[in-house]
Length: 358
Image (cartoon, rainbow, N blue to C red; front, side, top):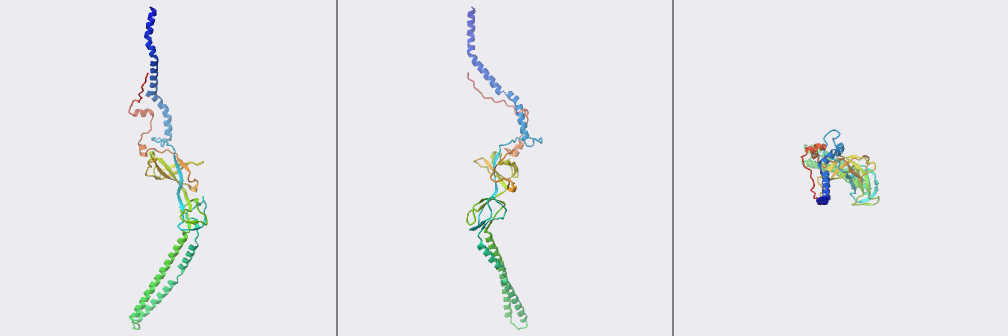
């Protein structure tokens, strides 16, 4: 009888033994999902984990040290830039001729108006000397003045004699005409002096074209010719302005409105021992390049003494807003995690729907 009872008990427990592994796996899966997706577990760890990050972000935000409202403006990745000369000019000759001398070398600093290249100007110098000689000759003017004085005296004498009847009225009229002609000849001689002075200015200008001068303060970047070569339609020298320098930034379109004309931004040249320098924004493109989704910003970087070289790379490593300042100012300030969640509308946690197949 006892054996029969034990056999019936084992028969009843055999289905439970068959499903025991599946039930254990189901319970373990449910426990893991409950531990991973329960909001209370995340909320318990959130304040302790977010507090140092919030303090660090607050320390780097503008206005945090003064106790002001901290906006959601973070430190963006460094923006690369290029430092170049403010202005570059290829010096050419307005006239054709043979180069007599080159007065500068590559790398020399030059001032505005300084002579750089002199062309052969023997003919022009001779023309200037001839024009100067003509301009100082005043014999024509003096002869015309003397002729006018004589014509005036003759007219006065005949005009006094006509009343006494010694001369005819026709003689007086002829004397008057001669006086008028003498006045016109004197005016013509004086006008010729003015023309000669202007001709002297023309030949001097032609002589000045034989000397090429620097259009601005800068540095000789390239020298393409030597003395004895022929100057034609090609550059002879290249002059670059290095004070101030021009900084070109390529900014993503997401930062449109984060900078304005006149702002000063820190620029760090990629040179040994270089420190941050302030550059002023002088131009912002009004169009965004559709291909790269970027726009250009131009800055002026003072460079007294030409201490920085042109052509160096640089970077802009500063907090730059990713949204316009007006939009950033309207955003709410950062607050503790508990208060922010209390202010936000309640919403249940989103859990993925998992299908468990046993």
